[in-house]
Amino acid sequence: MRKIIFAFCVLCIAYYNSYAQVITFQKTLRLGKFTNFFFIRQINDGGYILRGETSDTLSIDSTQSCLMKIDSAANIIWKKKYTNTVGSYRHTMILTNDSHYVFFGRPLLDTSYYKMYLQKVDKFGNNIWKKKYSQNGVWLSSDIQATDNSYIMTGQFQPTATTSNVVLIKADSAGNFIWLKRYNVNYDDGLSVIETKDKGYAILGLTNIPPGNQDFYFVKTDSNGNLQWSRFYGGSNTDWVCKVLQTADAGYLIFGTSNSFSSNDDFYLIKTDSNGNVQWSKTYGGTNTDYTSDDHEDHFIKMNNGSYTMVGMTNSFGFGSWDVLAINIDSLGNINWAKDYGSPFVDEYPVATSTKDGGMIISAITNRNTSGQDAYLIKTDALGNSGCNERDVTDSIIVKNVNTIVTIPVTHVDSGGMQDTVPVSWVIPNSTEQTICTCSVTANFTDIINGTTITFFDLSSNASSWLWNFGQGNNATQQNPVHTYSQGGIYTVCLTATASGGCSEKICKTLSIPTGINELQENIIVRVFPNPTSGLFNFSCSIIPKEIFITDIIGQRIITIPKINAIDISSFPSGVYFLNVKTEKGTFVRKIIKE
Image 1 (spheres, one colour):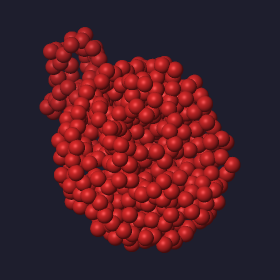
Image 2: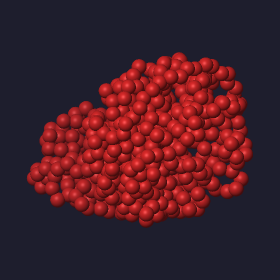
Image 3: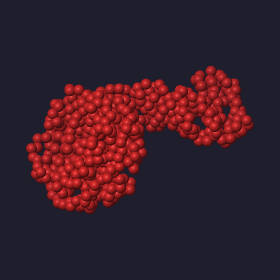
Image 4: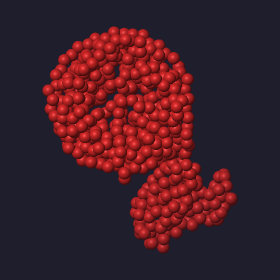
């Protein structure tokens, strides 16, 4: 399945807290009239590497393999187009242990039947080595680097037009062929491979025999590719797969699409134990069609917080005829949130990866106009917020518990294959990029504690509205609210700052309100005088302080004061400062005005 899409974009910069920056954006990229990126990963410098295909015409048959490096805000750093090669069935890539890249494809000028190559390039896309495997009829779909630094690849071996087998290939760290295994029942195709906790491999693919028109085909092997067990999973109609992930309990999550359980296509997720026995299975979707493509693997990812996100296409909610749909779930398949992203045009074929800031980035394709098809990038925070052209559809997703049919097939295994080498050439193509909408907000605040009454000061940038949660079930929408707590204790206060462009950011801080505060107010007195002051002031405290320090308006500590009563701030610029007196009964803060 191949469809193409539109172009539009947004750059949103935000902060979840004072330490971790979260960038969000939507942006389009183009190398030629036709640009698709079907693989994206974040790399060590915070930027991203993308792999896909490009063409100077709108013909898919003229596409060539390409790489692009962008920074954390999606600005292009470099790009490469490989003129003698085209992509394979899927455009996956390995980020190697030595910080290089390995990917496979098909030689453009090779007229042989599905003859594939494996290529390694450095971090700038320059060739290190390239190997062509002389086994005809092989079309690769997924690859990984194993713990022994070898490369493991799966795909399809098609000796004739009417027969096809799942294939598993192992090559060493220099790309030299080691072994090839073929697993066959009828017309089968391997689409996703992982190394398992026992150092074996799990292959997820398709088969075209009963119980349905097309079902999931799961093959589990040992480290040498020897078959351990295999399963078919599906319903009464067509089901197609995208991705397998192993879970903490050594079981598996198997993700794809099904039209076996409703009148439309839906996302389809199966959870099994370590032996392939189904523990639960569910479908997710709206009232129309929601599906993923078996052309691409990264429709299903694990997030940094341990949750999982499914991404695909939808016309159930859309801004246009097709949109990007992302559904985030917990380990039991329960929905945390769901988002629809798009424009009035066609936006399809998303793949995704998690990012270091807890969010994710999606690469899709877009048909904004007839002049070409562009790559469409969506960078979100941990809750799926990108800043524009999105809507929350959490409450509109229909979740069904479904009965997956499991069949144990008779899988035949054989082996063979060899390799040789071919040359490579390069060009640096022209490129364009476009930002469609911009929105940025930084959430921050400080506070002054006076007994159980707290005055909050908004320090956010670019905010036009504010939502405070004081940790007691109380909210406020003023920019600088005052809140009185009913009793002392530990409270988490959160501020959500929203910009006029619609993007928002949330920051939370923990406050310690002294207990027994009525007694403290009566018996503990902290005085500052004179105030305002030109520089020298005195303070008194009815109990012995443990620490004394001065902070500025944004809460940053400027100076720690010896335990003396006279303090000189004549060297400070004029403005507002805060004297913090920390005692065993709590911290008392007094505002100081420096003239």
